[in-house]
Length: 222
Image 1 (cartoon, one colour):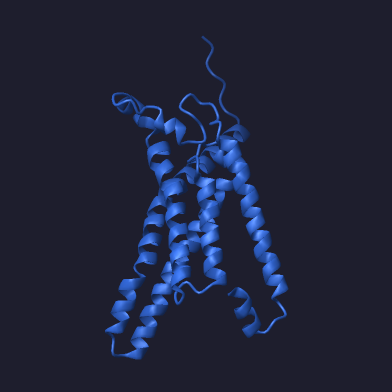
Image 2: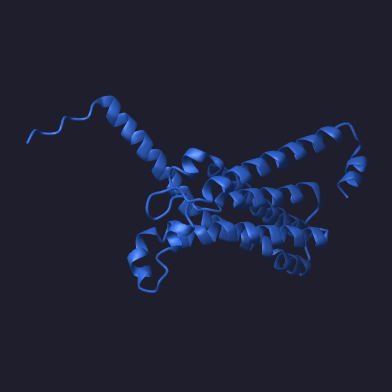
């Protein structure tokens, strides 16, 4: 039997690059549920933070505590959105078999951030409720298929004993048989369109209000 020919330097570099990119994306996908959990905790901790601030007697300490909370809360949401944009890339979403509804989760998270951007979710109770609902929907759309789809792909034999061996393939962009999920491309296409329309609408709104006074822009946001 002839011995296999050694890899050339270019082939080795290509293999390392493609393998490293895939490992990095899958690692980010695995870390995102942790970021989602922290983001949700920080968002729904707002009533506790307000009660705590009400008991402080030092105004400066209260301001520092509130600003620190807002910074960490919004930074977590921004980082989560920035990392979630990878699910809108077809070569990664389809090629690596990422969670099926991850692109929709990215769009819903963007909507929550847009609502926070144009409305005051800290002082307006109705806006806070809208943002909370959008964040819950987005987290479910990502965490459920990530855990029960991507992370459970190697547990098909165990799930077969209870008749749930079809679940990992149904919740991933690539099915258990290696074929593309029938819902993957429609979900990705719809998400790309919604993401683009949301960004365009936000840009147009800012351009229209660019020359207005702060009072005019505040009134338009209402």
